[in-house]
Image (tube, rainbow, N blue to C red; front, side):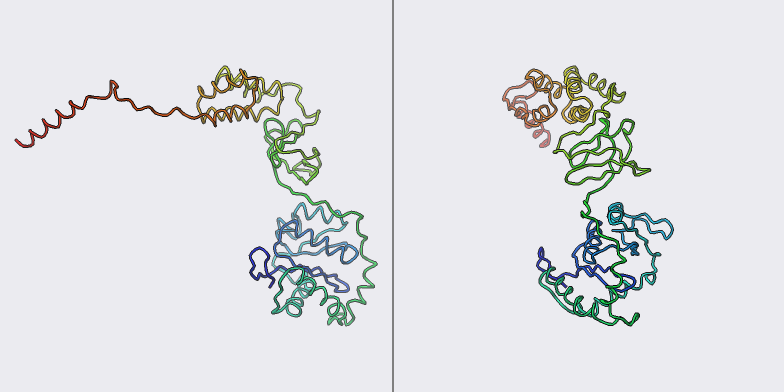
Length: 357
Protein backbone atom coordinates (compact mmCIF):
# COMPACT_ATOMS: atom_id res chain seq x y z
CA UNK A 1 0.00 0.00 0.00
CA UNK A 2 1.47 3.34 -1.12
CA UNK A 3 0.06 6.84 -0.61
CA UNK A 4 -1.23 8.26 -3.89
CA UNK A 5 0.16 11.81 -4.39
CA UNK A 6 -3.03 12.90 -6.20
CA UNK A 7 -5.63 11.69 -3.69
CA UNK A 8 -3.54 11.49 -0.53
CA UNK A 9 -4.97 8.03 0.22
CA UNK A 10 -3.17 4.69 0.41
CA UNK A 11 -3.55 2.70 -2.77
CA UNK A 12 -2.59 -0.82 -3.76
CA UNK A 13 0.17 -0.78 -6.37
CA UNK A 14 0.82 -3.08 -9.32
CA UNK A 15 3.84 -5.38 -9.17
CA UNK A 16 5.81 -6.19 -12.33
CA UNK A 17 8.12 -9.21 -12.09
CA UNK A 18 10.58 -10.43 -14.72
CA UNK A 19 12.38 -13.69 -13.83
CA UNK A 20 15.29 -15.29 -15.67
CA UNK A 21 14.68 -18.98 -16.33
CA UNK A 22 18.13 -20.32 -15.39
CA UNK A 23 19.29 -18.31 -12.37
CA UNK A 24 15.85 -17.18 -11.11
CA UNK A 25 17.23 -13.65 -10.89
CA UNK A 26 14.23 -11.28 -10.64
CA UNK A 27 13.55 -7.66 -11.43
CA UNK A 28 10.58 -6.34 -9.45
CA UNK A 29 9.08 -2.93 -10.24
CA UNK A 30 6.12 -1.08 -8.71
CA UNK A 31 3.68 1.18 -10.57
CA UNK A 32 0.32 2.75 -9.77
CA UNK A 33 -1.32 2.35 -13.18
CA UNK A 34 -0.80 0.18 -16.21
CA UNK A 35 -1.06 0.89 -19.93
CA UNK A 36 0.45 -0.43 -23.13
CA UNK A 37 3.31 2.08 -22.91
CA UNK A 38 3.85 1.46 -19.19
CA UNK A 39 3.99 -2.29 -19.87
CA UNK A 40 6.65 -1.79 -22.57
CA UNK A 41 8.63 0.67 -20.43
CA UNK A 42 8.76 -1.84 -17.57
CA UNK A 43 10.31 -4.44 -19.88
CA UNK A 44 12.84 -1.90 -21.09
CA UNK A 45 13.74 -0.88 -17.55
CA UNK A 46 14.06 -4.54 -16.51
CA UNK A 47 16.42 -5.29 -19.43
CA UNK A 48 18.62 -2.35 -18.50
CA UNK A 49 18.71 -3.42 -14.85
CA UNK A 50 19.85 -6.88 -15.91
CA UNK A 51 22.45 -5.43 -18.26
CA UNK A 52 21.21 -7.54 -21.17
CA UNK A 53 18.21 -8.90 -23.03
CA UNK A 54 16.66 -12.34 -23.03
CA UNK A 55 16.08 -14.02 -26.39
CA UNK A 56 12.51 -15.04 -25.47
CA UNK A 57 9.91 -13.47 -23.19
CA UNK A 58 7.21 -15.82 -21.90
CA UNK A 59 4.38 -13.58 -20.77
CA UNK A 60 0.83 -13.65 -19.50
CA UNK A 61 -2.05 -12.63 -21.77
CA UNK A 62 -2.49 -9.14 -20.37
CA UNK A 63 -4.28 -6.71 -22.65
CA UNK A 64 -1.28 -4.37 -22.47
CA UNK A 65 0.84 -6.96 -24.28
CA UNK A 66 -1.52 -9.36 -26.07
CA UNK A 67 -4.56 -8.12 -27.98
CA UNK A 68 -5.87 -11.54 -29.03
CA UNK A 69 -4.78 -14.53 -26.92
CA UNK A 70 -4.00 -17.58 -29.04
CA UNK A 71 -1.39 -20.22 -28.34
CA UNK A 72 -0.71 -20.66 -32.05
CA UNK A 73 -1.18 -17.18 -33.52
CA UNK A 74 -1.44 -14.47 -30.84
CA UNK A 75 -1.93 -10.82 -31.82
CA UNK A 76 0.53 -8.68 -29.88
CA UNK A 77 0.09 -5.04 -28.98
CA UNK A 78 1.89 -3.09 -31.78
CA UNK A 79 3.84 -0.86 -29.40
CA UNK A 80 4.97 -3.79 -27.24
CA UNK A 81 5.92 -5.80 -30.32
CA UNK A 82 8.06 -2.95 -31.65
CA UNK A 83 9.80 -2.52 -28.29
CA UNK A 84 10.73 -6.21 -28.24
CA UNK A 85 11.93 -5.99 -31.85
CA UNK A 86 14.10 -3.00 -30.91
CA UNK A 87 15.76 -5.11 -28.21
CA UNK A 88 16.03 -8.21 -30.41
CA UNK A 89 13.72 -10.49 -28.44
CA UNK A 90 10.41 -12.22 -29.20
CA UNK A 91 7.31 -12.83 -27.09
CA UNK A 92 5.66 -16.21 -26.50
CA UNK A 93 2.32 -15.73 -24.71
CA UNK A 94 1.15 -18.58 -22.48
CA UNK A 95 -1.96 -20.66 -22.88
CA UNK A 96 -5.08 -18.92 -21.65
CA UNK A 97 -5.87 -19.65 -17.99
CA UNK A 98 -2.76 -21.83 -17.61
CA UNK A 99 -0.40 -20.02 -15.18
CA UNK A 100 1.67 -23.16 -14.57
CA UNK A 101 3.32 -22.56 -17.96
CA UNK A 102 5.22 -19.69 -16.32
CA UNK A 103 5.54 -21.04 -12.81
CA UNK A 104 8.98 -19.47 -12.26
CA UNK A 105 7.67 -15.93 -12.51
CA UNK A 106 4.46 -16.78 -10.61
CA UNK A 107 6.64 -18.01 -7.76
CA UNK A 108 8.58 -14.74 -7.90
CA UNK A 109 5.36 -12.76 -7.59
CA UNK A 110 4.19 -14.77 -4.58
CA UNK A 111 7.64 -14.51 -3.01
CA UNK A 112 7.56 -10.70 -3.16
CA UNK A 113 3.97 -10.44 -1.93
CA UNK A 114 4.53 -12.69 1.10
CA UNK A 115 8.03 -11.65 2.14
CA UNK A 116 9.11 -7.99 1.72
CA UNK A 117 5.82 -6.21 1.03
CA UNK A 118 3.28 -7.97 3.22
CA UNK A 119 1.51 -5.60 5.59
CA UNK A 120 3.75 -2.59 4.83
CA UNK A 121 2.73 0.96 3.93
CA UNK A 122 4.87 3.55 2.16
CA UNK A 123 4.47 7.30 1.75
CA UNK A 124 5.69 7.41 -1.86
CA UNK A 125 6.35 5.09 -4.77
CA UNK A 126 10.14 5.80 -4.90
CA UNK A 127 10.35 4.93 -1.21
CA UNK A 128 8.56 1.61 -1.80
CA UNK A 129 10.74 0.82 -4.83
CA UNK A 130 13.94 1.61 -2.90
CA UNK A 131 12.85 -0.71 -0.09
CA UNK A 132 12.08 -3.47 -2.60
CA UNK A 133 15.47 -3.00 -4.34
CA UNK A 134 17.35 -3.27 -1.03
CA UNK A 135 15.48 -6.47 -0.19
CA UNK A 136 16.23 -7.85 -3.67
CA UNK A 137 19.96 -7.14 -3.35
CA UNK A 138 20.54 -8.17 0.26
CA UNK A 139 18.16 -11.11 0.65
CA UNK A 140 16.57 -12.40 -2.57
CA UNK A 141 19.82 -12.49 -4.58
CA UNK A 142 21.90 -13.98 -1.77
CA UNK A 143 19.48 -16.78 -0.83
CA UNK A 144 19.88 -20.44 -1.77
CA UNK A 145 17.06 -21.20 -4.19
CA UNK A 146 14.83 -24.07 -3.14
CA UNK A 147 14.80 -25.73 -6.58
CA UNK A 148 18.34 -25.18 -7.87
CA UNK A 149 19.99 -25.48 -4.41
CA UNK A 150 22.38 -22.72 -5.43
CA UNK A 151 22.76 -19.05 -4.70
CA UNK A 152 20.75 -16.86 -7.10
CA UNK A 153 23.50 -14.22 -7.49
CA UNK A 154 26.14 -16.86 -8.29
CA UNK A 155 23.93 -18.44 -10.96
CA UNK A 156 23.19 -15.00 -12.46
CA UNK A 157 26.93 -14.44 -12.90
CA UNK A 158 26.99 -17.58 -15.07
CA UNK A 159 23.83 -16.61 -16.99
CA UNK A 160 24.61 -12.97 -17.67
CA UNK A 161 27.08 -13.59 -20.58
CA UNK A 162 24.28 -15.44 -22.41
CA UNK A 163 22.08 -12.34 -22.50
CA UNK A 164 21.89 -10.26 -25.67
CA UNK A 165 23.62 -6.89 -25.59
CA UNK A 166 21.54 -3.76 -25.08
CA UNK A 167 20.98 -1.42 -28.05
CA UNK A 168 22.81 1.90 -27.98
CA UNK A 169 19.64 4.00 -27.85
CA UNK A 170 16.41 3.42 -25.93
CA UNK A 171 13.19 2.87 -27.82
CA UNK A 172 11.31 5.95 -29.06
CA UNK A 173 7.76 5.55 -27.78
CA UNK A 174 4.81 6.57 -29.91
CA UNK A 175 1.04 6.69 -29.86
CA UNK A 176 -0.98 4.72 -32.35
CA UNK A 177 -4.50 4.44 -33.69
CA UNK A 178 -6.56 4.16 -36.86
CA UNK A 179 -7.63 7.09 -39.02
CA UNK A 180 -9.84 7.48 -42.10
CA UNK A 181 -8.34 9.17 -45.15
CA UNK A 182 -10.51 12.22 -45.80
CA UNK A 183 -11.67 13.66 -49.11
CA UNK A 184 -8.58 15.89 -49.22
CA UNK A 185 -6.37 12.78 -49.08
CA UNK A 186 -5.21 13.47 -45.51
CA UNK A 187 -5.62 11.90 -42.08
CA UNK A 188 -6.07 13.95 -38.94
CA UNK A 189 -3.69 13.58 -35.97
CA UNK A 190 -4.12 16.00 -33.06
CA UNK A 191 -5.79 18.64 -35.25
CA UNK A 192 -3.08 18.57 -37.95
CA UNK A 193 -3.38 16.87 -41.35
CA UNK A 194 -0.99 14.52 -43.15
CA UNK A 195 -1.28 13.17 -46.69
CA UNK A 196 -1.74 9.54 -47.67
CA UNK A 197 -0.79 8.06 -51.07
CA UNK A 198 -3.29 8.51 -53.93
CA UNK A 199 -6.12 5.98 -53.98
CA UNK A 200 -6.60 5.73 -50.21
CA UNK A 201 -9.54 8.14 -49.78
CA UNK A 202 -12.21 6.66 -47.53
CA UNK A 203 -10.03 3.82 -46.24
CA UNK A 204 -8.84 3.21 -42.67
CA UNK A 205 -5.08 3.19 -42.09
CA UNK A 206 -2.99 2.55 -38.94
CA UNK A 207 -1.16 5.67 -37.79
CA UNK A 208 1.79 6.04 -35.40
CA UNK A 209 2.92 9.40 -34.06
CA UNK A 210 5.30 10.86 -31.52
CA UNK A 211 6.63 14.33 -30.76
CA UNK A 212 8.58 14.49 -34.03
CA UNK A 213 7.02 12.30 -36.73
CA UNK A 214 3.77 10.81 -38.03
CA UNK A 215 3.84 7.47 -39.86
CA UNK A 216 1.04 5.95 -41.98
CA UNK A 217 1.12 2.15 -42.38
CA UNK A 218 -0.48 -0.33 -44.74
CA UNK A 219 -3.26 -2.11 -42.78
CA UNK A 220 -2.55 -5.47 -44.44
CA UNK A 221 1.25 -5.65 -44.68
CA UNK A 222 2.28 -3.13 -42.03
CA UNK A 223 4.66 -1.47 -44.50
CA UNK A 224 5.34 2.25 -44.23
CA UNK A 225 3.15 4.29 -46.58
CA UNK A 226 4.16 7.82 -45.61
CA UNK A 227 6.29 9.49 -42.97
CA UNK A 228 5.81 13.17 -42.12
CA UNK A 229 7.33 15.64 -39.69
CA UNK A 230 4.90 16.85 -37.05
CA UNK A 231 3.01 20.06 -37.82
CA UNK A 232 1.25 22.58 -35.63
CA UNK A 233 -2.50 22.36 -35.09
CA UNK A 234 -4.46 23.22 -38.22
CA UNK A 235 -1.49 22.78 -40.55
CA UNK A 236 -1.01 20.36 -43.46
CA UNK A 237 1.87 18.11 -44.52
CA UNK A 238 1.34 17.03 -48.13
CA UNK A 239 4.06 15.51 -50.26
CA UNK A 240 4.29 16.63 -53.87
CA UNK A 241 3.61 13.13 -55.20
CA UNK A 242 0.38 13.03 -53.19
CA UNK A 243 -1.09 16.15 -54.77
CA UNK A 244 -3.65 15.16 -57.46
CA UNK A 245 -2.89 16.42 -60.96
CA UNK A 246 -6.61 16.78 -61.72
CA UNK A 247 -9.45 17.78 -59.45
CA UNK A 248 -10.97 14.58 -57.99
CA UNK A 249 -14.56 13.79 -58.86
CA UNK A 250 -15.63 14.03 -55.21
CA UNK A 251 -14.22 17.57 -54.99
CA UNK A 252 -15.93 18.58 -58.24
CA UNK A 253 -19.26 17.35 -56.87
CA UNK A 254 -18.65 19.31 -53.67
CA UNK A 255 -18.01 22.52 -55.63
CA UNK A 256 -21.18 21.98 -57.70
CA UNK A 257 -23.12 21.53 -54.49
CA UNK A 258 -21.74 24.86 -53.24
CA UNK A 259 -22.75 26.54 -56.53
CA UNK A 260 -26.32 25.27 -56.17
CA UNK A 261 -26.50 26.49 -52.57
CA UNK A 262 -25.78 30.10 -53.49
CA UNK A 263 -23.90 32.26 -56.00
CA UNK A 264 -21.67 33.97 -53.43
CA UNK A 265 -21.14 30.69 -51.56
CA UNK A 266 -20.03 28.99 -54.78
CA UNK A 267 -17.62 31.84 -55.67
CA UNK A 268 -16.04 31.77 -52.21
CA UNK A 269 -15.69 27.96 -52.18
CA UNK A 270 -14.12 27.90 -55.63
CA UNK A 271 -11.71 30.62 -54.56
CA UNK A 272 -10.73 28.55 -51.54
CA UNK A 273 -10.09 25.51 -53.72
CA UNK A 274 -8.10 27.51 -56.27
CA UNK A 275 -5.90 29.00 -53.56
CA UNK A 276 -5.38 26.04 -51.22
CA UNK A 277 -6.03 23.01 -53.44
CA UNK A 278 -7.37 19.85 -51.84
CA UNK A 279 -6.64 21.15 -48.35
CA UNK A 280 -9.61 23.51 -48.82
CA UNK A 281 -12.09 20.59 -48.92
CA UNK A 282 -12.56 20.72 -45.15
CA UNK A 283 -13.23 24.48 -45.26
CA UNK A 284 -15.78 24.00 -48.04
CA UNK A 285 -17.53 21.32 -45.97
CA UNK A 286 -17.47 23.73 -43.04
CA UNK A 287 -19.19 26.47 -45.04
CA UNK A 288 -21.86 24.02 -46.23
CA UNK A 289 -22.43 22.94 -42.63
CA UNK A 290 -23.03 26.61 -41.73
CA UNK A 291 -25.84 26.66 -44.32
CA UNK A 292 -27.66 23.95 -42.35
CA UNK A 293 -27.27 25.95 -39.14
CA UNK A 294 -28.00 29.52 -40.29
CA UNK A 295 -29.83 29.09 -43.60
CA UNK A 296 -28.94 29.87 -47.21
CA UNK A 297 -29.77 33.57 -47.18
CA UNK A 298 -27.77 34.35 -44.05
CA UNK A 299 -24.68 32.45 -45.19
CA UNK A 300 -25.00 33.92 -48.69
CA UNK A 301 -24.89 37.43 -47.19
CA UNK A 302 -21.92 36.49 -44.99
CA UNK A 303 -20.00 35.14 -48.00
CA UNK A 304 -20.79 38.30 -49.96
CA UNK A 305 -19.39 40.38 -47.11
CA UNK A 306 -16.24 38.21 -46.96
CA UNK A 307 -15.66 38.57 -50.71
CA UNK A 308 -16.27 42.32 -50.56
CA UNK A 309 -13.68 42.68 -47.80
CA UNK A 310 -11.19 40.49 -49.68
CA UNK A 311 -10.93 37.84 -46.96
CA UNK A 312 -12.62 34.78 -48.41
CA UNK A 313 -11.84 32.43 -45.54
CA UNK A 314 -14.04 29.93 -43.72
CA UNK A 315 -12.95 31.24 -40.35
CA UNK A 316 -14.13 34.78 -41.20
CA UNK A 317 -17.54 33.52 -42.37
CA UNK A 318 -18.02 31.41 -39.25
CA UNK A 319 -17.08 34.20 -36.85
CA UNK A 320 -19.17 36.71 -38.77
CA UNK A 321 -22.23 34.49 -38.37
CA UNK A 322 -21.49 33.74 -34.71
CA UNK A 323 -21.21 37.43 -33.83
CA UNK A 324 -24.36 38.50 -35.64
CA UNK A 325 -26.90 39.68 -33.05
CA UNK A 326 -30.53 39.27 -34.07
CA UNK A 327 -32.56 42.52 -34.10
CA UNK A 328 -34.62 42.98 -30.93
CA UNK A 329 -38.37 42.72 -31.17
CA UNK A 330 -40.09 46.13 -31.18
CA UNK A 331 -43.39 46.54 -29.34
CA UNK A 332 -45.90 48.78 -31.14
CA UNK A 333 -49.04 50.34 -29.77
CA UNK A 334 -50.85 50.57 -33.13
CA UNK A 335 -51.02 47.70 -35.59
CA UNK A 336 -53.72 46.29 -37.90
CA UNK A 337 -53.69 43.09 -35.90
CA UNK A 338 -54.19 44.86 -32.57
CA UNK A 339 -57.88 45.56 -31.83
CA UNK A 340 -59.14 48.53 -29.86
CA UNK A 341 -59.74 48.00 -26.13
CA UNK A 342 -63.34 49.22 -26.49
CA UNK A 343 -64.16 46.16 -28.62
CA UNK A 344 -62.97 43.83 -25.86
CA UNK A 345 -65.01 45.85 -23.29
CA UNK A 346 -68.19 45.55 -25.35
CA UNK A 347 -67.73 41.79 -25.79
CA UNK A 348 -67.20 41.27 -22.06
CA UNK A 349 -70.28 43.34 -21.13
CA UNK A 350 -72.44 41.46 -23.66
CA UNK A 351 -71.34 38.09 -22.27
CA UNK A 352 -71.96 39.24 -18.72
CA UNK A 353 -75.55 40.35 -19.48
CA UNK A 354 -76.28 37.03 -21.20
CA UNK A 355 -75.13 35.10 -18.14
CA UNK A 356 -77.25 37.22 -15.80
CA UNK A 357 -80.40 36.61 -17.92
